[in-house]
Image (cartoon, rainbow, N blue to C red; front, side, top):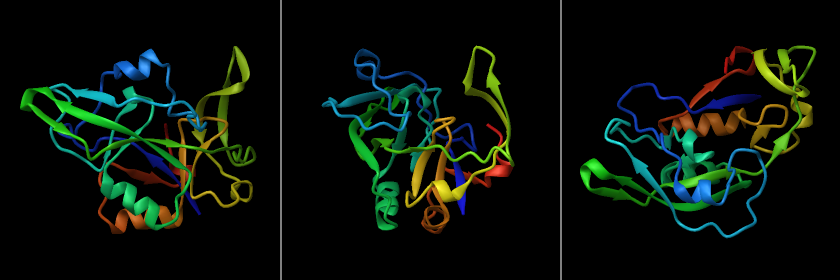
Length: 190
């Protein structure tokens, strides 16, 4: 079974990245579309504002980076279950209010997008301007036979949705990883 992986804070105190790092903007980097990054990426400097939380999770909500922000513990758990389609990019997280820097985290890029929506069990609307792009999902059904052997992937039809195999979910929960929530596809509401 595959689960939807979500990056949602459960408490206001959890750190979130609210400003896009300059290098991501300058190089127009996308870590959220399922494509491999083939160019050299310099060190990514991430600034955390004083009002952006002070509790670190293993998976920091980092929408402004266009990617995922994983601790070494989370990276180790994913590697231990065989997730092998991730790219990691060096970053430093600056907590200006505390005059503190962290270098344990990496920007993660999932390489792999799979078209696996089961239209017969899904309910969604397409963009009026583009009938191939999904605007809203009311109910998500997945055809797991199309996924093959990937343990972690982005949904081709809506690349902001991340799917993970049951064994990834189990390993993350067993390790006490914070900053990740899982939903059955049919229960997920973006």
